[in-house]
Length: 178
Ligand code: IMP
Ligand code: MG
Image 1 (cartoon, protein in one colour):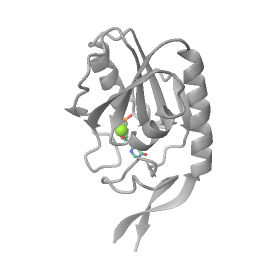
Image 2 (tube, helix red, strand yellow):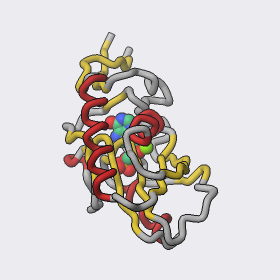
Image 3 (tube, protein in one colour):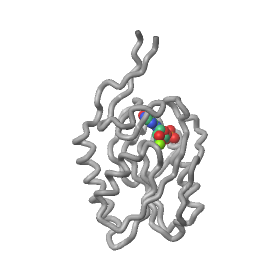
């Protein structure tokens, strides 16, 4: 039988928290004196988003998009669906999109296009994990937590089949043959 388990921790809880504080300081500095609208991409970004929002010292408004692209697989289907859109008007606002991980770039490319159509004043992207080896389309990333190898990651919001999101650290998902 082919069973998937999470094995090696790749990034510890302490390392994640430390890096998020640094990202929060950079974002606070870059948007000094301005308001920020933080859009989290659910479900994967929920843990990162909650921690990041609390280390940004600016007037922040929160919003979420529920998007889906993997549908139970470990590779992007390329077809991104918005299952639930943001409810506020972002026209003329500084928007920072908060995403868990960028792999092929297809999800982000689609979300960027969708959000730009809503005419924000600015649109930047903050991702926790960047898997450059999987890239199929060019995307601009403004804030990156960690560069990671082309492995399937779970924990800290990231899932396999909607499981393991509550792991407090990041781990590599492995195939076990029994
Ligand atoms: P992309 O469209 O290929 O860039 O994939 C982006 C989306 O796929 C992310 O928002 C994640 O939800 C999901 N994803 C990509 N790689 C992983 C992974 O290693 N673990 C869990 N989810 C992933
Ligand atoms: Mg995601």
